[in-house]
Length: 210
Image 1 (tube, rainbow, N blue to C red):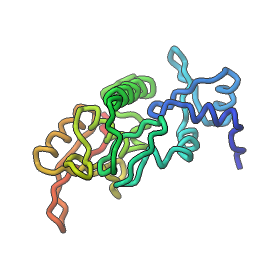
Image 2 (cartoon, one colour):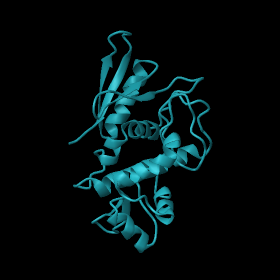
Image 3 (cartoon, one colour):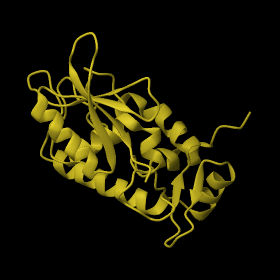
């Protein structure tokens, strides 16, 4: 079994950018994380270090309750950015939220640039495919759309049994069209479907590969 990271390495992992996984630390710390398969050094300048999927998993052991809250539960304000999936109780909507969302979206575009083989920012990257609900929710919120709250209508992003697909629910047809347009601009493909039992319309969205 692989030994757990040291306390110093864990601090570097915990301090990684919550969206891009970009790391800051001494060269010795970063090299140790690379050796353990928890980070990689990007081949293009400025050769920054990023968490691997294994490194993200370790980081999320501490922050899962914040970064992926259960529907109807609000994330605590701990300084870790959390995309709003819709349905949170008392969601944080303070004056800094717009700045946080903008910064997170710009960070995600940078991650696309640095990790897509062709450097494209128009197409989702591996991180988004591994965090479908959060990635779709961030794309919607970054487009200026409002997630559902206990006292207000809005979108809700939920997991589905299908690989690489999320369901997006909205209060009406116009809201679904707006969500579909926002996701398509962000590099996703979205189609409208009807739930057979309830006849409720929803979007099925997945990251584009080409």
